[in-house]
Image (cartoon, rainbow, N blue to C red):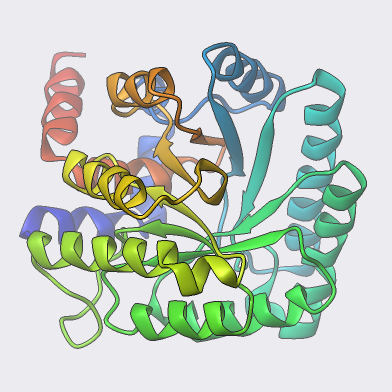
Length: 311
């Protein structure tokens, strides 16, 4: 993994740097490229704009690794309010959550109860919830919680990080269990070589292989649904070609991309009749997410630093 990316991911966990960066007006303006806003009204407006362009959305109320029950319950309440607001506005958007924001570190039962509140509201609003995958210490616990929640709720999916060596086994097991509703991503955390592929071609190939696995006839027979979440044309073209060659119906898959990135790719896929969903983050806790986006593309960091020096 490139040194710059490793360093930026490490800095994304720095409270001291976060406190400094979030006070700089330029940082807030730069973050708006990747984050729809700090207020719910701003993100609703962003979703409606995407809808008008033929795209769906999934909302992420930014935050992770909460340390108190009050914080976790407040985060869940924010999602409940957001689900009501989406419904009232007629906005076509799911929501995405992180289990550490929902209190996973405070106990599995506490987290289960907190997430269940969101799922009940989502079901009431005929909506859907996606559990984001976090770094490797949480992989097994996240999958366990997903399985537990799916016993009571079917409006729920999971994210799988393709760069983890274990992911093919995880995907196959969930498909076999009839729990195959996936968003496939490359992975945005700094993981050791023992756990994750380090070279970009390896990660790309792993994502393609998981896409093919999810679209295979045996998987579709298990009602598997896959969201291919990538800005990489090699990955997108692979998924399109595989679906075409194997007569995979459009109802079995979609493409997902991040807010503010590769808008031309988003528009092209919509024009070709594909379902496209944009991952739209919002909220005041944007610093870790912002730093991970800078880590993914050094050009973003260089632009930020030049603007910061010239400010």
